[in-house]
Image (cartoon, rainbow, N blue to C red; front, side, top):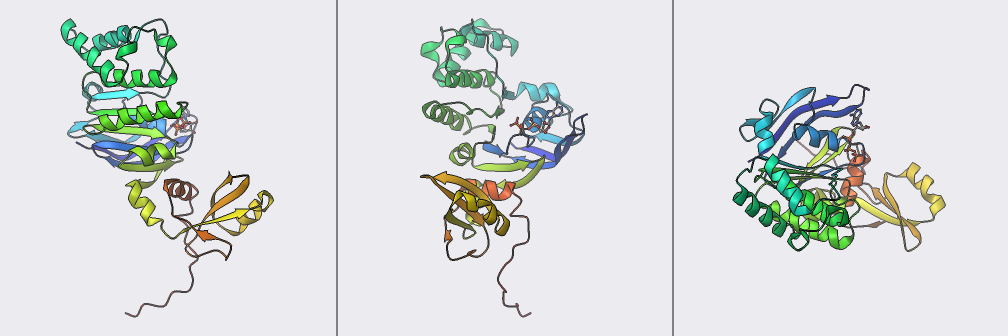
Amino acid sequence: MELVIQNLSKTYPNGVQALKNVNLTIPTGMFGLLGPNGAGKSSLMRTIATLQEADSGSIRLGDLDVFKEKDEMRRVLGYLPQEFGVYPKVSAEELLDHFAVLKGIHNSKERKETVAALLQQTNLYEVRKKNLGGYSGGMKQRFGIAQALLGNPKIIIVDEPTAGLDPAERNRFHNLLSEIGENIIVILSTHIVDDVSDLCRNMAIINKGEVLLTGEPLQAIDEMQGQIWRKFIKKEELAQHQAEHTVISSRLYAGKTIIHVYAQDRPDIAFEQVQPDLEDVYFATISGATKKPQRTQAEPEVMA
Ligand SMILES: Nc1ncnc2c1ncn2[C@@H]1O[C@H](COP(=O)(O)OP(=O)(O)OP(=O)(O)O)[C@@H](O)[C@H]1O
């Protein structure tokens, strides 16, 4: 099963073009949709989830035409939105049971079994009687996954699920997602690069409504080999380096400023080559550096 998005565009009434001719093919497994705030991720997620219309383009899930068969899409879709509110005074078991009724599971024995199984799967069974108001951020997110899994969806969409989780909770959430991603399509929308490098076999980088890169994270990293250079600098030297080089990131490391530069050749003797990671791919892509023609040293002419 594949989700195929073709020529999808959307401009909001205020003139913001949130999606610009988006084309993506998303196979079974975990798919990372990576981009900064405002990139258009939520717009794309909501469009796939049939919660808003596009101006043009199409989305197909296998044989299903998502825009023409919204009800069918909703039946096979699980969605964990960015803002997932819960009723604080209700227990997980009660609320999940309620959602199960809404999903059309009317047989009470079947519903009880389904709810229990989902609470087990998301590791919430022990705390199923507890009110959701007392849940930690990670527990709420796992509850969000439990409700998204109701009705055996073929595709699950999770919008920025690990923001605000502590490392242990994030890890638990990752394990849960990757388990689910073995059998169905899981689209993970995030601005956290590590979420994608840890979990996703395929990904797309999106910025300003445009898909800038799509493929396998490991391959994208491989293609960046030999083009990332690092230098420790003084903070006040940053502007000058930015003017002279394609600085894709700068951060503090042990109290010093460390910059990563994207270039075909060593910019100068003070730079050392580094093994690229997905963060380098992400920043180089987002900055537009990979699109610009590179200044290369004179290459010998190839004789015909
Ligand atoms: N309903 C709306 N009306 C007008 N503009 C909108 C609407 N929703 C989103 N936008 C704008 O469209 C652009 C894309 O927003 P979107 O929420 O899809 O991005 P995002 O990648 O999900 O970002 P974030 O991580 O901040 O949610 C932004 O410029 C945003 O301000």
